Length: 144
Length: 151
Image (cartoon, rainbow over all chains, first blue to last red; front, side, top):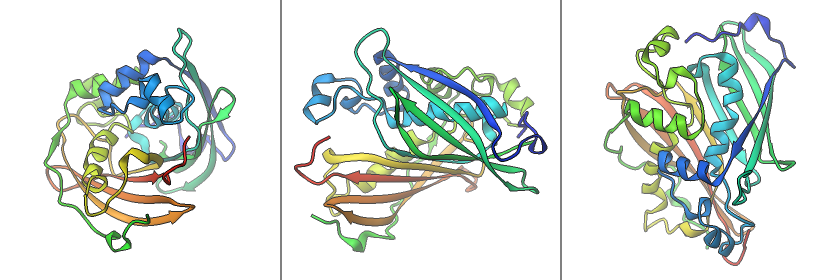
């Protein structure tokens, strides 16, 4: 594992570069195929509304996959992630237009965990349309 | 109706091996729009110390969730899957999943809780490679909403 960020160069409070990730209906269809999750709430508006959702929503696992990119892009090695967990608090609603939705992700180092293992905890914040879509979103990462 | 607590601690038989293919990893990386070379370029992955291309961190969920199907579809457990939403997800990695891995999943029911009429089910999926080495553990929390509750 070869993270490009050194453990010695970060401290609690260090902010990672924030990113925004667009998501359209086409994105969801593609993700459904790649992940094998064909639940119609992620592509069928009629079905989504029948079960009480405002519209088609993104897969929670899609949002989780996008959020960690703020960390994997930062470390340079996706294999440096030791632990990653989230709570799905609000759905990302994806309208049927060219714009779709946007997932905004920021992150900062919450704590340095282990000087020997060179691990840090990074807390993520993910919002869409002004609402927090992930809660308790955190990862443990091994740095260089 | 609350789920049977006697299912807590129950493990299900390990799944048949899932062979992780390079093109499947590429497809997944493209679906999440992630151009990181470690997912598609074996040389780039080796430069980072991996023996072959690796999968994005959440890739393994499609394998562990299929395995968790053994639990959620267990007729004896009696979970109403039409009311199930994904509550929490966590992964603890020994190493990243990589192309060529043959992965088996052993699912265990960690906890069953009932809160405000909702059934909450915690499933742990232990993922091992063909050599029997641990790769990752997936902790999945599913919430079956009480009947009559929408949204």
